[in-house]
Image (tube, rainbow, N blue to C red; front, side, top):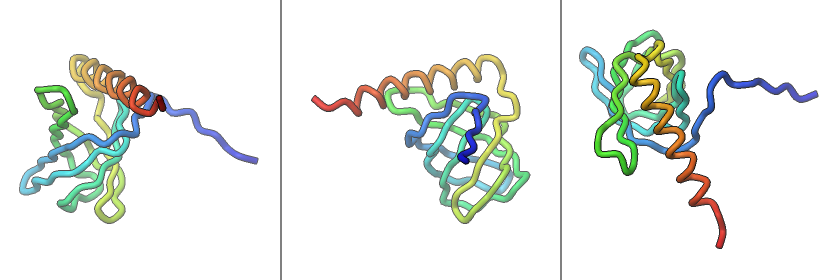
Length: 114
């Protein structure tokens, strides 16, 4: 029997450039999976579980980077890791939701065959 888990927030599987920063650590990577509560990414600089990172996401078509002040690393597997967005401020949460909505529309529009 297959088990299905309902996610708390809509997730977007779309590549978005990201820069992550923490005392003594600065890396760049790609977000592979984004939601209001966190993301999964691949980076070029090692991180460890429990680290608090500041993220700058560079969303295609958006001139301003999306800034997340605090994202806690919750798992690491090689160059891949997951972060939790420690309850983002309402304005940041609103922007994440808008980014996901815009990218979902773009993703669905680009997947149509004509």
